[in-house]
Length: 129
Image 1: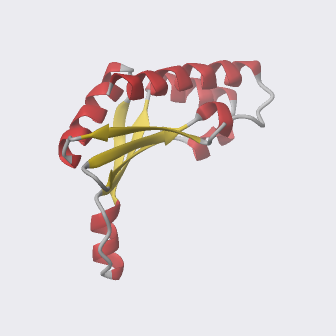
Image 2 (image 1 turned 120 degrees about the vertical axis):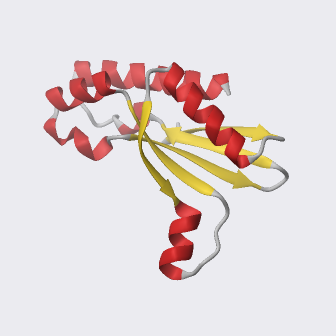
């Protein structure tokens, strides 16, 4: 199993794909609390051109609260990163973490249950696009 989940969207401009991703995340109970525009950052910091690529930090406050209450080190896994990148041939790829893989070393039933729920919602977001 991969450490990420992914979906290719065809014939949709990058900005429209981002709008759809944000909407579908909201439908699954996630808000975007951070955003990194990689292309803009790389241009500004090292004067390099890069394809449109954004990292959205998606957070469901109830899940974050449960995770941090159970395991205080869980902040290294938050927020759930969702990436949007322009690909060739008029395609946009949406990628998100796979919490089932990233939480594999965990021995807590509560955290495993939470990882399953987050996985289910992130996959539903991708499926809805």
